[in-house]
Amino acid sequence: MLEKMPELTLNDGLRLPAIGFGTYQLNGLQGVEAIKRAVAVGYRLLDSAFNYENEGAVGKAVRECGVPREELRIASKLPGRHHRYHEAIATVEESLYRAGLDYYDLYLIHWPNPKENLYVEAWQAMIEAQKRGLVRSIGVCNFLPHHLERIIRETGVAPSVDQVELYPFFNQAEQRKWNSEHGILTESWSPLGHANHILQDETIVAIAKEHQKTVTQIVLRWHIQLGALPIPKAVSEAHQMENLNVFDFTLTDAEMEKINALTRPDGRTANQDPDVYEEF
Image 1 (cartoon, helix red, strand yellow):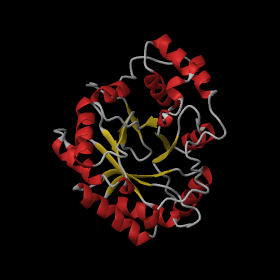
Image 2 (cartoon, rainbow, N blue to C red):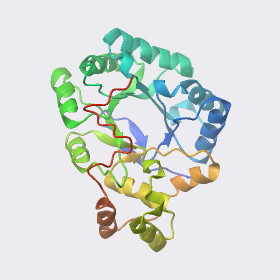
Image 3 (tube, rainbow, N blue to C red):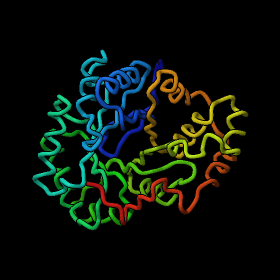
């Protein structure tokens, strides 16, 4: 078990662990047990979503894990079909009922869905949900700079987090720079790129041998040194522990540059461009 996890402070003062645990496809009893294992080895940030249909499993794991609720950070996300103001607030409430929780630490708009053009309305609902105490911190996922500029301009409130696809073949340098300049933490979903050729990449394999670490550990360490917060998923205790064991070494500037050089213009794994992609 990791004794002490480094933390990052959001623009609203909430502190998050430097690495989180993704729960996508962890459903039912098997999901509950996997999440409980993750908490037991040291994870304190659990990332879920309304559309993952596992908020109940996350909540059950939280109640059964033996760690006080206030020591955990639980996140979920608003689906695109509920961007309208009153629907959005009701969805946050429903998320809490599903999970059996009194509040979420972090709640995110899952995608901007620009064709529907309701993401500002959804953001206004997030602001209200925070005011009502349903959520401690509010953020977004997959918002490009112009989406972020608009919601900040029209509401005066900046998200605390922007969770985006980020891995070595798609390093999101411009997005990360914009977020950082505006006090928004970048979270990394699919930080290993679905292991999309990453595990065999010669550059990363060589760096892993140099540090006597696994390729997975090198990639997660790269995220951390970028200033991003990765949320890898792992079912087995061994892989969960492997993913946490990234705080006892540092990549050199040259190694970081080599990994950054792997990025590709078409690096999105499923071609989910936030300016086009619609999620409901």
